[in-house]
Structure formats: structure tokens, C-alpha cells
Length: 205
Image (cartoon, rainbow, N blue to C red; front, side, top):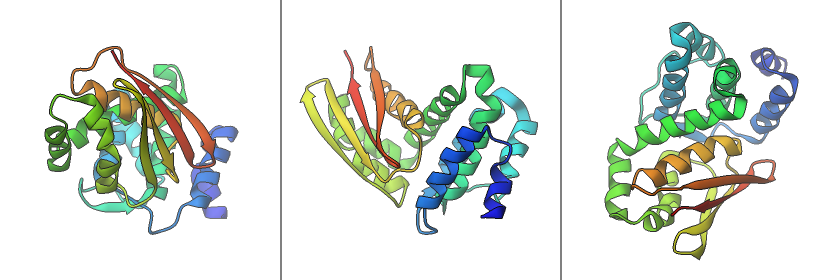
């Protein structure tokens, strides 16, 4: 635990406490694709340059990530929380930077073979795309359970169980993925329902 605390001492106390709670609930078998690490680092690089990227890499053992290799989500949590605190002031806060990281991750994922397949299956239907998102997530991370409930043709709820990222990150992911099909007036609002459980209200015009 002392090593973990050392790695997060640069964070604001409340943010560090949230991170440690999420880390404590993760296991070595909980992994995410390297593209998400690279997406977070790219978002940091755009705002803070290579020096900021180096600060993020200092909290994980790896110094580079292969897009479709799997890496422990614990490392992604440490890296993204560090980047969000570093760059947050430029965007309006910690959550705003997490959203930007989520948006970047979506851009990267949709340009991959798995992402292109997801878009192909959706055709021109944002609803179909959202319905297929649980499958997309399973291709990208090893953990969690996700389901969709619809309240209309352009409104519904994505329920995530045991997903380690804070709501703001997936707000960025979901906004970008729905907008990728040309939807306008996209609204995404996350509400935490447990330590690592969240519901996202989705709608578009």
C-alpha cells in the first residue's frame, strides 16, 4: 500500500482517495487495450507536450503501449488520473480533462478494425450503435458488465457494472461515439450508483 500511496501523492487528496478506492477494487486480471492508454497520453500531449506525458508515464511501469495489447486497468487509472489533474486546469477541471480523454479514446477505437466493425453494424442508426456498445466494450476491456435500456427511439440508459473509470470519462466516450454517426444535440449524463457502478442517460435529436 505504501508504494501505491507514493504513486498518487501528487494528486489532490479527494482525487487520490477516489483513485485508491478504485485501485483496491481492481485485480491483475482486469485489463484494457493499449489504445486507451495512448488516447489518454495523446490528449495530455496536445495540451501539455512531452513533459506532461513523461509525468504520466512516471506512475506506470510501461513507457510505451501497443494499441491491441492488454495492460492492467490499475495502470490506466493511475495514468489517467495523473493526466487529468495535470491538464485539468486548462480545460476547466479534472472531469473536463477526463471527458477529453474519453473522446480521444473513442476516436482511436473507431479508427481500429473493431471500431470500424461496430460502425458498420450500426449503419446510420445511433440507436443500433448504442445497442451494440456492450459488445464493443467487451472487445476493448476484460472487466465489467454493460446493458442498455431504451425509453424511446433517441433516448435511453447505458448501465455499467464494475467499470473502474469515473463517469466523466465515459461521458466523453459516449458523446463521441454517438456523434460519430452524425447525431446532433447529444446529451450524456452519468450518475454513479456504486463504487464502480454507473448509469448514463443518453439522448439526441
